[in-house]
Image 1: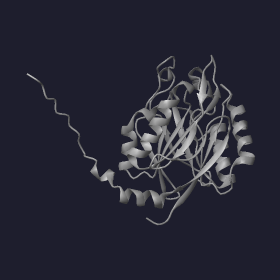
Image 2 (image 1 turned 90 degrees about the vertical axis):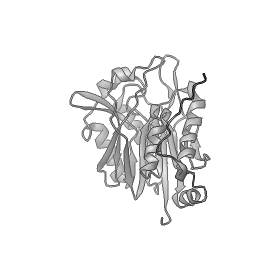
Image 3 (image 1 turned 120 degrees about the horizontal axis):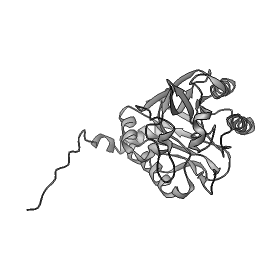
Image 4 (image 1 turned 30 degrees about the horizontal axis):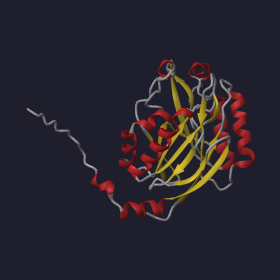
Amino acid sequence: MAKKEVKISMLQMSSIIGEVEANINKVKDLLEYRLPSDSDVLVLPEVWTVGWDCASFRASAQTLGEGSVHDFLSYIAKKNSINIIGGSYITIKDGKYYNTCPVYDRSGNLIAAYSKNHLYSYYGCDEDKYVSAGDSPVMVELDDVKFGLTICYDIRFPEIYRAYMKAGADVLINCAAWGFKKAVPWEIMTKSRAVENQCYMVALTQSGYIKNNEYNLGESRIIDYEGKEVVSILSGEGIVSGVLDLEMMYEFRTKSPTLRDIRDNYEVKLLCKN
């Protein structure tokens, strides 16, 4: 492939629970002085509009392509001439609610949307009571770079990332609101998804207090195809940016062609001892 670099900016924030307009203003303020003018893609975290509070989801829901969240993201994309992978917010369609990641091009056009395929409903969380699961992965092409979209709990299912790799993904995205008690799984799984698929991984999560002594982890990272951190923001709020060198990634795949050794089928043979 031709020489290609892409600059990704991640926005880590502590959302105000249930306050859509306040969170829009918070993102606006963070972007004002901290977004590099040469960024190609801006990535936001999961449910940044309301924070990780499932009971607040439905009251915040908006129709995809309409409403204040859409208007804001479209405006920011066009104003800054930047592609946006908009984390996620709660959308409603035909009476059903979804945890949805919208994607905008540099002109502010909504060009794709991915609804979370796996809903986290354990340890006191009950996401599946408030939203429905999406039915398929979604890969989107921005400036000739292919991005595979996932949200939070999806990271525990390597099959979706393998599907993206087989479909030609260059960059894997996981926008999350990840709990602080699960720091080790977050780091291990995000780096594993990058290594096993020889892709860049953008792993972005919220930070800060949720409620009832629960906190978001922070620890947002861009990880390269060998599992090395390109850039990270471990705590607090802010924007960090990293340059992804896709030419080097494809050279690495040529030198270490392990992806060619993947079999189409791994049928398990059960050997019984008599």
